Image (cartoon, rainbow, N blue to C red; front, side, top):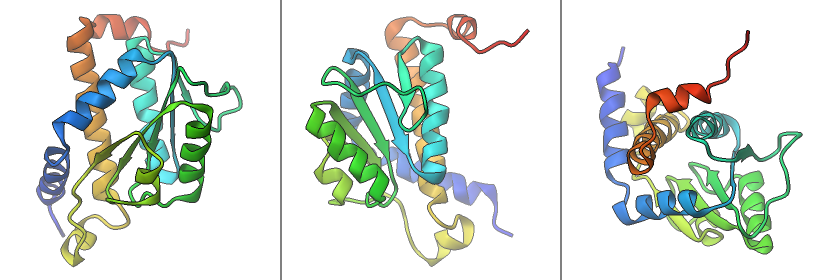
Length: 178
């Protein structure tokens, strides 16, 4: 059995490979957009939904594309798309539609020069080690998905710091059922 440390090392490498300029462009775009729309398919979509929840807790107006209550994207909004391959048809199509409307489009991917990158204003690129050894430890994009989740959690902390938001502030926006 492989150890969790090996997976963590691959994720660390992927997260550390992100260009700081692109990371800052993502954060600035989030802070300067009226609303944030997030989309990914499959497990990437689940990571996007986790990020959306945290952003709501920070006070952002966030929607996951495809939900029944998702409003139309406008030119004042940010569309954040997540796809390891950058070729997932529904994700690329969402990017094309958002661009046509005039929304800022940012993609998070592990594949350089992919279709998604070509339709994005900003690409946050992870260097994913994709070889036989990583496939034994983390098959089918696991390193990308886990890295994306950890990267987004770090983004949340950076936004908290920039905006002076405390955990208590977030807790006050947390869904509570009584």
